[in-house]
Image (cartoon, rainbow, N blue to C red; front, side, top):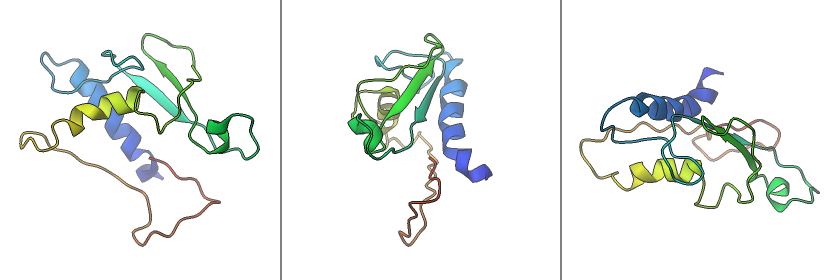
Amino acid sequence: MILRYLSTFVLLLLCVSQSGRVGGQFQCKDMKNQNVDWFVFYKLPKVKGSPSDSVADGTAFLYLDKNNKQWVYPTMNMLDGNHAIAYTLQQYYDRQDDSMIMSIFYNDEHPDNVTSSSLGHQK
């Protein structure tokens, strides 16, 4: 159970811990690619037959941050590259070969690609 929330916690911890540092190397980014102290990105469940394509295919999400404390249902989906998670992680991808950057990633997929459509899947 604890491992389910580890990746979310790590991303949040990265953002919060770096936000207070002067000259911090990484910073949480909002939906407009501006620095923000924290954000919440909530993936909506896949709902077959939904009139919304992103809800029907499971790529819809809700978003809020320190400056906008009301849930927003964005027009883009999770696969688009213009949202808070993409902007925040892009800082790492731009510097992934930097020997001064340490990274830890967690994936809860089964190692032999066994998947389940009836069990929850968290990142």
